[in-house]
Image (cartoon, rainbow, N blue to C red):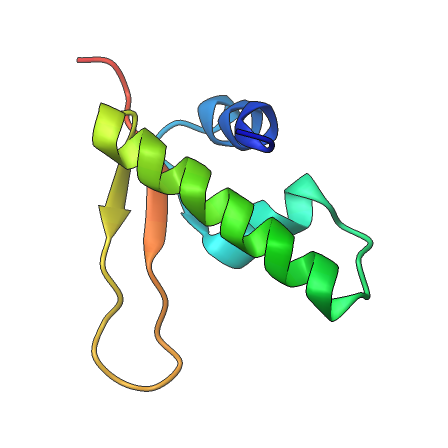
Length: 79
């Protein structure tokens, strides 16, 4: 997983904070203007987030109904 280190680094530094996927993608690679490259990074980050959700490290809040809504991702704190 190409972007796992960056995603884990960002989210574990702020446990309990909700992140939009766009914020995570900008942290991983902030200076991309190339649409093809941006889509590849987006897919890679989504793959990492799905993996972290399956392992129980990240909690996903589904998007609210309506246009323009987005899912939120939060690093799980130890209990």
